[in-house]
Amino acid sequence: MALFPITSNFEGDFVLQLVAVDSECTMDEVAAAAAVHSVGRRVRARPGQIMRVRRQGSEDFLPRSMRVSESGLKPTETVEIIWEAPKH
Amino acid sequence: MAVLNRMDWYDLARTTNWTPTYVTEDELFPPLMSGAFGLPQDAWEKYDEPYKQTYPEYVKVQRDKDAGAYSVKAALERSRIFENADPGWKSVMKAHYGAIARGEYAAASAEARMMRFSKAPGMRNMSTLGCLDEIRHGQMQLYFPHEHVSKDRQMDWAFKAYDTNEWGMIAARHFFDDIMMTRDAISVSIMLTFSFETGFTNMQFLGLAADAAEAGDHTFANLISSIQTDESRHAQIGGPALKVLIENGQKAEAQKRVDIAVWGAWKLFSVLTGPIMDYYTPLEHRKQSFKEFMEEWIVAQFERALTDMGLDLPWYWDIFLKDLSETHHGMHMGSYFWRPTVWWNPAAGVTPDERAWLEEKYPGWNDTWGQCWDVIIDNVVDGNMAMAYPETLPYVCNMCQLPILGTPGKGWNVKDYPLEYNGRLYHFGSEVDRWCFEQEPERYAGHLSIVDRFLAGMIQPMDLGGALNYMNLAPGECGDDAHNYAWAEVYRALRAEKKAS
Image 1 (cartoon, rainbow over the protein chains, first blue to last red):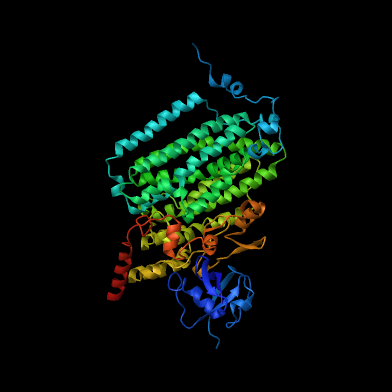
Image 2: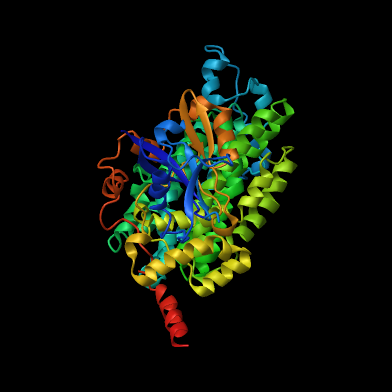
């Protein structure tokens, strides 16, 4: 359990932002923490879609239940928060 | 008694180099300060300034010019221009004075370094006059806003800004410290006078003078036009130095300095001048868009100045040309959304008419920045003000110290440009910012950005109040919407109209 700063690059927003999470947060929790500073402020919510986390430059999302401490992310590393439509 | 014409004696009178016998040349001109690039004194004696002026001529001309600017001010002091000006225009003045006045005064020390340490006698003469210019510009741009301090506390930032840790001032200081306070005489001539002044001060001074005259603020228009004529003279100090360097096989080093300074100047102008021209200046007073002005003054004219000199266009020119349509929109949105952290009141500039103008000047604006503004506007119209302010810091670039941003909405292209150096993870706003850092990492590596300071626990408590306190923004000085959100009324009316139909 430790505070862990990440840099949020939220899909559709215009700026990178500092977001404080906990090292034991899951990627879904990271996405939710990042959304606080973008969704409803400068980015419209997308009902029915979920938010996924990936490293900048990667096509693959990190598993939703993966914890920050398991992800290999470095403090202040930039993650992209990407909207994902539900799979039918 | 007949007086000789200036050109009959000028060249001889400014031939002031001599061969030192009591000390070595390096003791007289320490390379760290002189930046002679390994060239001996006689190479620098070929330096030939295109604009020649003597001290008596300088005093006569400047006395007349200053008298003109001061008398316009005196004549208009009772005109209540400040009281009656559009709030957006007042913000232009506040941003300008705070960012510029003390920087001009600091530039006097950079000019003084050329005056004492340059091996080129002509440069020493021209920068003597340049130093006097910068002292006068500092004084005038503190004296002119002073009459408004009693009316508006934010005007006090004309003097105060430079000493604070306000984020924009950290960015401005980082840039000016880099190009003029910590460089040798020759590098100052290239980076400050050639790159920054020739390239960019036209933007701030000519563009703003036109907008000021349109807005009816003749005091400000007169002041900054007067300053610009001095800048045009002392901006020519760097050109002949570049010529000497290129003739002596030092083009690569000269080019590198130009490339670093031009990029830093561009980033600073994207946050200072871009929002002013495209958002704060009332629509009916806008002469040109920021992009059009940049294309005329920087792309057309500065490009020619570079190639005439025998230099190449900076390697990043294509990136720069693309950014002319993008970066300042993000800088505006950032300084508006984080408005409590600036010393002026940003004008939103996004009424339907203004948006139509933005869409015309920047096709696609509504699908990109407009998408974020739609959310901000809805919150303001709904009175949901908590969501119209930030609750965290934007991540800032470790080179330009400005927010790392890009195009939002349908054109989303925001990207970090990271670099690990000596175990520390640095973040940059562009490939070019990162390149600038990599040219001399040790020069920049120890600097802490506002975000680094926050993470290091230097800002306490770690909330907005702590941040404002750290930035020296007292109550009554923090920025808020220039028009107190009056512009939202038009959107309320549109909604009501839509509902009724």
